[in-house]
Length: 251
Image (tube, rainbow, N blue to C red):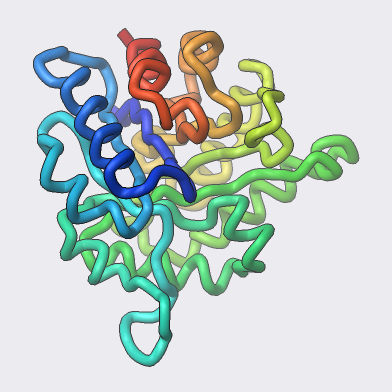
């Protein structure tokens, strides 16, 4: 049985004091309440250690927003998967559309990051998605399938540890949202590609999250679709009330 997951991606937001307060508020709102999903917050690297100190890992998972493709060495400013794991984090976002678009990250780099995350006990949240032009010209299924297939160099054992997040890039931070039917269609296609490569058991066990202007108002409809297993939440994760509202869409 695959897991339902709601993961927050804070991006480059909050200074340290604000981030620690937000994490504590989310943790407190979750604590003592049984929800039908796992909940994760992926925070700026500067926040990992202090946030780890204010959350209960039985209640709230902790993740990073990126990691280096290099294991260690003379890479000034980079943060390795081992460093992230040493903070107490358990997850790492890899291949977010902003990393692909603004920093030109390639499939080869993203696979290197994924392997290092796995080697260090981190669960990768691997992002895929099409831009508006690809949605409008009808190539979106091929584009996203190709991005997913970059992972297919992984063994079955390793792939089974990966969470996939589908983000229609045209719906990130724009206020636009893929309809629940559009999200379901893409998630089903992603799961179908995984099934062709790794078989029914792994495909059925892979959590596929939707990312792209998911809010409390539309989360329940999105999450009701059979192949949508949760969300990777951006803006709505920066306020405890709205983030918890999305978590409660699974209740």
